[in-house]
Image (cartoon, rainbow over all chains, first blue to last red):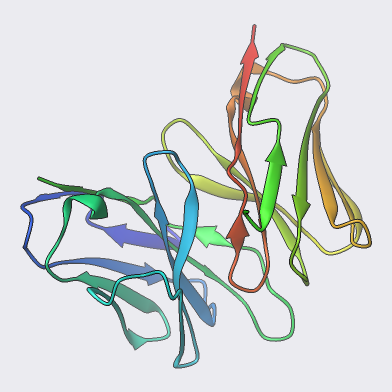
Length: 114
Length: 105
């Protein structure tokens, strides 16, 4: 069983469309994250979600919205896609509580906006 | 300026060489993570450490909290170690820019 799974793995779409990427973890972790990896391979935090507390990186456009139906899922919805949104998006999970636990990553979702 | 700086950015080594990758950070942390990203793109966690030293096989990670510095060492390097190594710190996981390692047979 995959610990952190993301779908789809590849997504090609036109500018202006709305798309979602799903993420599920079966590790029982209390915190989930979304990261964006740009063309230079630099990873940057977008969101973290812990027990209904959402922490947003202020540099993330409000076209991006995380949705967590339950502790095991954190989906990423993107409105009005732009060319600059093309990147690989990684979901991850960990324990937080008093001290951060090990990070477990999904395989990544490569988004290409045409 | 990035909260996490890694050096070197690129590293080429001959098989069998001892390798060191450095990470310096400017934020207060409870733990530091070393991650590995293979050419296929997947990211795996190698170490999480908050003090001292940890060892897994040929990999050793050390951290000096006072100096805000960590090192990742690879002993007897092998071509399968070729990957990007990323340092991450902080509650929101600030990432270094990564060190691209190529080990030549």
